[in-house]
Length: 552
Ligand SMILES: C[S@@+](CC[C@H](N)C(=O)[O-])C[C@H]1O[C@@H](n2cnc3c(N)ncnc32)[C@H](O)[C@@H]1O
Image (tube, rainbow, N blue to C red; front, side):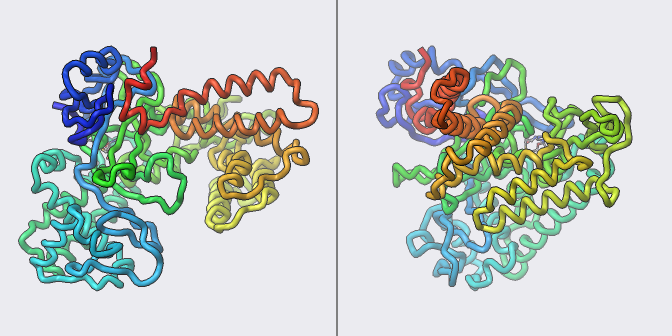
């Protein structure tokens, strides 16, 4: 049986005719009949039956490659077992179609009161089961309360997932999802994280208990056992996959969350080898199914674990930040990046070594909670540079807070402000190394400034007057690309964005007076174009008509 829960229909992989016959083993490609399935087999076989589920004590279940898998192979094609909207405060989202709702008074479903765009959305299939349950309980929510407490949204999720578990065939797959948020295989983790994990488990239990007791107490759904609702919300916490439509840069785009049978088995890695994305199928109004595909970002070797990141793939973070976020899934990360004291040579969490710096050398010391503390330059342990307050963490926290404040301002931040932040962070005597994740985040703000200006319809600064800035941005983007080669390798969207930025900046450099005949630059420009091509095939096209994109 396929690991995944896929759509029932799709275009034939060869002739595009609508078909209801997916490959029974992987359910990735559809065929109109035997003839086209046989014709496509040489291509299709590369990704068919290449995944197996294994388990161990530390990770629970995880997915491995049973054969070598080439980059770009579509490994899973799924629709959610159940889906619900993402509420991005201060906006509510429609319970039926998941669209973000405008600010101001909310319109509620006439029967249960949960927010909707209008009557049509309140009659959507996805909403009807919970709406009937509220009617059976004789309860209608006062819509204006909805955004005041997250228990209403949590209650809706619990109910929706629980009711979907009653329906076959999805129900059986939903019942198989990990739903307990007790940490496992976590012996030997730093004390501070063990404590935080315990705290997080308590908070999650309290949040779940609050929503469940509201449903059974205030609403009166006593006929649903508390443990079933708790299980449903636990499965949401452990497995939900959030996304927006593929390649949609619009911040107002629909945001939704789904529980997927196959994707829920995937292990997290901070340096993953696969990525997934999904979208609302707008080109076919009858399809509202948020198809999701999992793609091999790079070549994956036989026996390798197939991994995705549970974090925001576009953001570069130090180990403590990654660990804090991953506590939401009740685990302390043991991925290849987090296990290596040097973070695969990226040193995203490193500070300067006080000993080496005193001798005028620039060396790194790993931060205590990541690896046991030692400098790769001088071998000394236990002495890192401190800021004026004698506390390296204070400097890190200050920079982090400032970046957050500037990004959250909603205004274009002048270049000189980011530059100032960077020189402050990298000043002589400072704690942070130039490869620290926070420093890279500031460099990214600078490196992508022109691209963001274009995206926002602003005219980028005239390159000819800003040659120095342009060269600097090229250097920063090259640095980010080296990081992405490890963190988001191959054809992943984050690496593609870096490549495209570098391509655009190189083009601008070539236009500067005196650079027209710069052969090295021209060569890099051509090579970048070649590297970008494999990342550019629209995965939606590739998914629907794979034979058109087959390598010859
Ligand atoms: C979405 S589930 C993945 C499938 C799950 N292992 C199972 O048995 O169903 C997420 C859970 O997998 C485990 N996990 C995933 N990635 C991990 C990692 N890098 N390190 C440790 N545990 C991980 C954690 O227990 C986490 O709560």
